[in-house]
Amino acid sequence: MAVPPRLPDLSPVELVRRIERAPKAELHVHIEGTLEPELAFAIGRRNGIALPYESPAAMRAAYAFSDLQSFLDIYYAAAAVLRTEEDFFDMAWAYLQKAHADNVVRAEMFFDPQTHTARGVAFETVVRGLGRALERARQELGISAALIMCFLRHLSEREAFETLADHSLPRLLAAGLRASVHSDDPAYFGGYVNHNLVESCTTLGLTTSDAYTLLRNSLESSFLEPSEIARHVERLNGVFGT
Image (cartoon, rainbow, N blue to C red; front, top):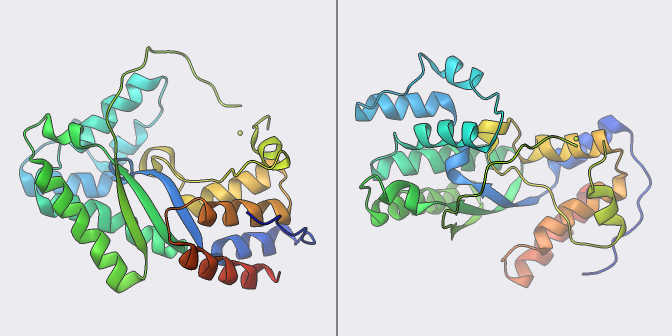
C-alpha cells in the first residue's frame, strides 16, 4: 500500500460530507445482523411466524444488551422468520440499498447457514435468495458484492464494556496497520458504515488524513481485482482532493 498523503484538516462539517460522498468497501457485516425489526415483522407475517414482541418498536426497545446471550436471544428470534428464498432476498436487498446510499461500492457479506439449516431451511434456499440480491445490486446499484460463509462458535459468557475515548483505532493507524471501520450487525447496534465512520472520526478526534486512510484501507483490503481497487481509489482521491 502506498503511504497515504497528509491532508490539511477540514472543518468537522466538511469532513462528514467527504466521508459520506466517498466510495468505500464494507468488509465486516453479518447479513442476518442487518434485519431491521420492521422487515422482520413483515416477513414474519408473510410466513405466519409470530415474533415474541408486540411490535417493531417493542423489539427495538429490547436492544439494551447486557451480555452476549441477551444479544443472541433477539438475533435468533429475528432470524427465525427467514424461511423462503424471497425472505433472504428481501433481507439482503434491504441492506444493499442502505449500503448504496452510503456510497459502498464493495460489500463482502458474512452469512450464517447453520442458523438456518438447523431450522430445516435448505442451504440452497439461503444462497439463492442472497445471490439474487447480490446480482440485482450489481445490475441496478453498481455495487460489487460477495458472500463469506461463517460457521458458528459459542464463547463462554463474559462481561463486556465500552471503552467509544480510549479506543485503539488512532494507535492502529499511527502504527501503519491497515485498519478500517465497518458495521458488523447494524440493525442491532444502530450504525451503518457512514454513521460508524463519522462517529469514529468525531469521537476519537481523527484527522482528515486518518479518515482518508480508513476509507482507502477498506478498498485496498477488499477482494476486488487490483484494477477495480485502483479505480475506486482514484475516485476517493477526487473526493478528498489529493
